[in-house]
Length: 74
Image (cartoon, rainbow, N blue to C red; front, side, top):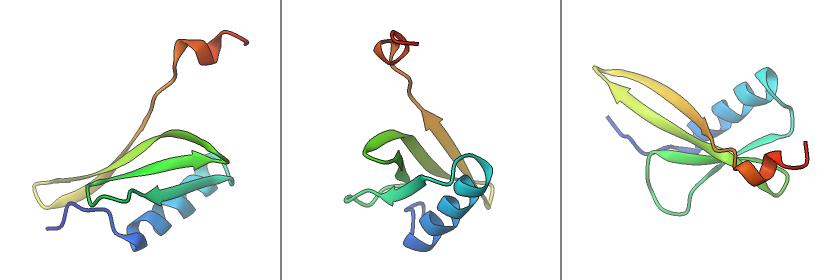
């Protein structure tokens, strides 16, 4: 099984995230081949989505990092 994120998988993930979370979300594969893609809204990178293959099943994990300085003005 290929752990690298494909363009087709990124497109499907983008449609899912746009439908479930925010229609402005964009999934961008990284320039280097790995199992992650970046999640963007506009120019801001929100986090990454990783492809996980375990016991023959494929899943995707969305990780968002929030810096403390991002919370200061709220």
